Each structure stands twice: as C-alpha cells, then as structure tokens.
Amino acid sequence: MVQGTTLLFIERAGRQLDYLVGAFSPKGLEGGCGDPHAPRNIVLPPSAQALTDRYLPAYEQVVHARQTAAIAAVLGDIRSEHDTWQAMSASGRYSDATPLSVAAFGVATELFLDHAWRRFLTVVDHAPALLDRCRAASSPWPDDAAALSRLADAVIDAEALVDEIVHGGSVPEQERRARAWLAIETWLADGETFLR
Image (cartoon, rainbow, N blue to C red):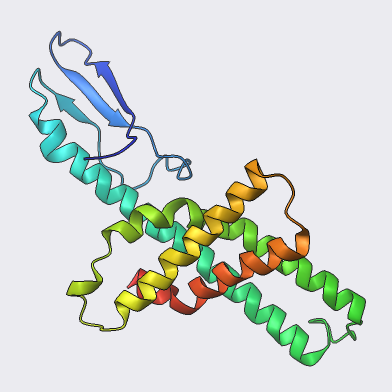
C-alpha cells in the first residue's frame, strides 16, 4: 500500500521471536524526530499482520498530514512574501519608506521569484501523491474538480521545468522565472481548495 516506505526491523531485546518495527521519514520530510503524531514503533510477533493492519495505515496518515502541512506552510510563506512584494511595488518604496529605484525594483522582483521557486519545490515534491488522493467528485464544492485539475497541471508544468533545468541544460533565467511563477500563482489562487 505504501510506495517507497523503508522499515527498520530490530530484534527485541530478551525475546527471540519478537521484533521492533519503525519507519524512516520519506524524502523531503526528514527531521521529524519527536513528532507527536508519528506512529509509535510496534512489537511485531512472528506474524506480520499487525504491520499491515495497524502500523502502515498509521504511517500513511502521518505522512499525509506532514506533506499537507509542509505544502500549507510553503504556500503561506510565499503568499506573505508576495503580499510584501505587491505592497512594495504599489508604493514604490521599501518597507522603511526609502524610494525604490527601477533597478532595485527589478532586483527585488528577481529575488522574490527565485526565493518563491525554491520554496515551491516542496509543493512539487509532495503534491502529486496528495492530489492523487483528492476526490473532487464527492466534494460538496462543485468547483473543486476544476481547481484540482489546474493545480495538477501546474505541478506537471513545474516538474517539466525542473526536469529541463536538471537534465536539459540551461533554461534562461527570465523564462524560468516566468514559467515558475505561472505554477506558483495557480497554487496561490487554488491552494485553499487543495488544503480543504
């Protein structure tokens, strides 16, 4: 049921046939030591039924919750930075009221877009598995299906951009920023539907 889950089996001290079983955090969700929502390690008798009945479903729920929380945090951070950038561009001034030159505005825009893209890669990593679980047909909100489709398309476009950057060589900065922003903007617009 769980793709790519790495389990750790350790012989239980003092028991020849019992094992302690735990799972490693999936890629991108490391650093969860002490997570109060993580499934507890279990004692596994010679039968592995407890593993499939209890442990793996609990593990899936924790991974789902952590992936959703990671996406929510990223979207919140990008939205906050975007609001700051919009206020700065509308006023033509820095937050300390210093006038913003055209060159400085261009640099500030590039920095915002580059930082937003780096943060958005978390969405690119985690959203596909979560989008697969969304059931828009059973949602009480009729526009969910269209929003979820736009979000999935935006992730596909971002994955293609990542693939071009990593495997296809250089993508011009201006093109990368424009393509990245289209995906980010879609998630800022429809991300609440996904999180709901």
